[in-house]
Each structure stands twice: as structure tokens, then as C-alpha cells.
Length: 154
Image 1: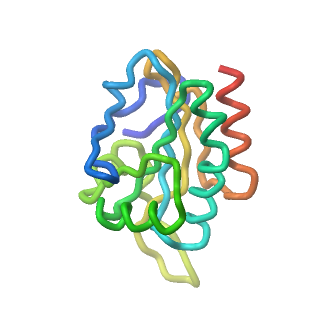
Image 2: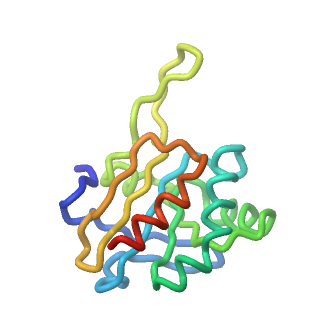
């Protein structure tokens, strides 16, 4: 399965930073932004989280939660969030089930070496639980602002 525009969003029910839990089912009737990223405290992932954090008040004003998902542990998420004072929910997908369901666990290539990893991808879920927009192979620069514009257009 994969998260595709126009289709119902795959299930998402994961533990989050600060001992929380996030579930798309619990958000039913509200739009949400779900973004997948490879690893806490790496350059691109930190920049992406900071960019979403900078726009957090704008997303909140529109009633749209922003949820970052990686395979890092909740404990690592807590450290990452505290270190950079992040204002997004960070969900832990340690077993990779959500990454598989959303189609972001993919074969990657770096310096000629192939390996499996998380594709940087963002999904805008509409109030009906469908994928309104999907950004695949995301480039971090200006991405959070583009997602905010798409939320405003919902």
C-alpha cells in the first residue's frame, strides 16, 4: 500500500514524544499534515523540523496538526525536540509498519551503495481522511511554506 493523492490515508497510530499517542482516526473530521523523515538530529531533518516549527502558529491557527514520523525511538524524539525547541509532534515508527503502509520505506542509493531507508515525504490529509496532496522526495528548502499554502487552499 502507499499513500496516493485522492485515496484514503493509511492508518497511523503511533507513540509520540512526551509519552503521547497520535492517531489519524482520532483526528477524523480535521485536516492534518504527516511528514516522514529519515533521522532525528541530522542536518536536513533538523532544518525541516525547524521550518515546520517556525510555521507552527500558522498551522495551529488553521487547526491543522503537523506530525513528523521517523523510526527513531520516543526517547530520541524527546531529546531532538528539547535540543531544538521543536513545536511539531514527533511520532515513533520503530517497527516501520507505518513507513511500509505509507509507501515511504524505499530503496535508496548513496555513494553507489544501495540500502533501505525512509523517503522524505509529506502528506496533507483532508478532513475526510483522504490524501489531498503528496510530496515525494522532498527537498527541504521552502517545503514547509509550500505545505502551509496547500493547507490554506484546502
